[in-house]
Image (cartoon, rainbow, N blue to C red; front, side, top):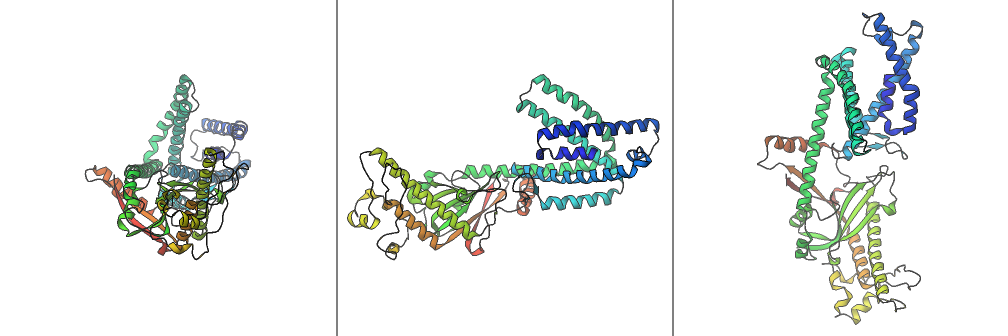
Length: 498
C-alpha cells in the first residue's frame, strides 16, 4: 500500500487534481491507516517479532493474496519511480541544470510521457550493484527510509515556498504548515539518521553526486552564456565593416547556428577572421523547442532582417515540437528555409507598397517597372535602391539566361488597391536569393570551449576546466548537425575565458 501511495505521488503531474483527491481520500489513506495500525497492534502484542513485521502480521489464510498484492504494488512503485526520474531529469535539463540527454516522447497527446535511455540504463545498473553490494533487505530498507524522509522534508519546504510566492497564503498559515509537518518529519529524520552507517549513506551519496553534477553544469552554462552576451558584436562595428563585412562575399547561403535570439554572436567575428570569404546570404539560426507535439511546417521558421538590406543577413528562429523529427533531411530543411525567407521578402515589399498607398491615397494603382526597364531608363538614378542591394561577385548575366525579366509574382493587396508588380529591389533580392540557393548551403558551426581565467580560484578552475569540460564533451550534441554531409560543414573553435 505504501508503494501504491508513492506511485500516485510520483505521477501527480499525470493525473487531475480531482482524481488525486478522491483516490487519496477514499482508497490510499484508509488502506495506509489500517495497515500501519494493524502492524502497530501486532508489535504491541508480539514485541520480539522478526523484521518481517508486515508479513508476520498477516493471517495465514491471507498470506498469498497479500503477497501477490504487495508484489504488484512494488512493480507499480518501481515504474512510478522510473517515470518520476525521467520527469525530474527533463525538468532539470529545461532549467539548464543537467547535461543534455536523448529524450524520446512516447505519446503525441501527452507531453509528460517520455523515455530517457541513459537514465533507464543507469537505474538498472545501480539497482543491480546495490543489491549485489548490500545482500540484505535490512540495509536497503535503511537507505529507503532516509530517502523517503528526505523527500518528505523537501516537499514540505517547496510547498511552503509555493504558499508564500504563488498562492500568497496568510503568513501565519504559511509558517504554521512547515512548523507542524516539519516537526514530525524532523522526528522521523532523527530516528533514521542512526542507520546512516548501516546502509543509510547510499541516498546521501547519490544526492550529493547529482547535486554536484547539476550545480557545475548550471554554473558553467551560465558563465558561458553571459560571456556570449557580453562579447556579441555591435551593429556599429558591422556598419564600419560595410556590406562586404570586411571580406569577400561569394554566392551561397551560410547558416550560422547559435543560442542567441537577439544580436550577432561573437563566433561570427571568428568566422570573418578565419575564412578568406563569406557567403552572400547569412542566416543566424537559433533552435527553440516549444511545448506542443508538432509545429506545422509553415510555422517552423520566424525570420527578421539583421542590419541594412545590402548586408543580406537574417535572424531565423527554428521552432520544433517534442514530437517533431530533429534530424530531418537537410534538403527539405533548406528548401523550407528558402521558402520562408522568400515570404519575408515579399511581405516587406507588401508593407512598403501599403505604406506608399497610405501616403498617396490619390493614386489608383501602383505600378513598378521591371528591373530591365529601370536599368535602361533610370541607370543613373540613385532612387531605385539597386546599388545598395548589390551583392559582391554576383553574376550580372543571371537575368539574361532566364529571358527579358524574371518570372512575375504578384503581391496581394486589399480590394481598394490594385495588385502591384514586383518592385526592382524585391526582384533583385529574390534573384540573388535564388542564385545563392543554387550555389549551395554551408553550415557554420561554432565550437565554444570554456576555460577559467588564470587568476581564478582553484575550485573554479577544477570545476570549469575539467568537470564541466568533461560533461560538455560527453553530453548530447546540439541539433544543428542534422544529416548534413561533412563537406557542407565549417566548424570554428572559440575559447571563452570566464
